[in-house]
Image (cartoon, rainbow, N blue to C red):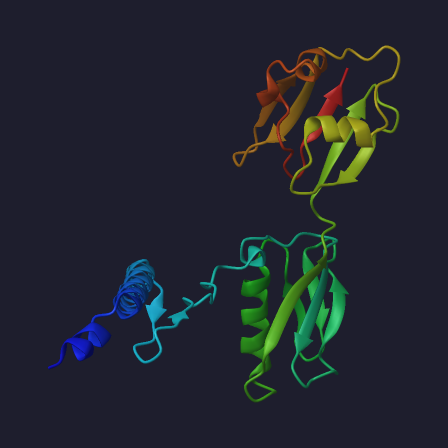
Length: 231
């Protein structure tokens, strides 16, 4: 090899070019390795990776089945129920639970609704309808809750019976009843609550303390048939 050829092969320009190519190669390799490591971490955390293109697949977002809130609700008198039988409009209807706790449906007559959950009632209706309809599909929905009520008595603007929601507290009850009258004993309020054995529990409520942030546990959530007494 001639001196001229050697100088051409190892010229400074060629050496710089080769160094730049090598640096780019190693940079791309390092970036690729980092990406692969990230995918592996995601896969370990429960994200599946596609072995062909390396894309991350999202985990399933399908919600687990949970019992409906209506499964635990107990029907009471005056509740409004929507009874639907698929493809049987003549049997489907909206009914109000009578004071005796029963409803009336075509073909079936009177059925006990009070004291039962919507699921229990729809199972009974479906079972009895099977004598007249092949594989009846029945749903029972509580359209209006009217049986869950509480009472406010005594020195308030509007004593009476009120519909109960899941979050009604003693303070809410007093506000709904129009607040206190002039001579209400705000420190001596109490809630009368019925027990399963027929006895009554008296829960004290000192309005003056509660609104100051003291004894917040006295501001209990009301239960069906509770009575708030304002002396």
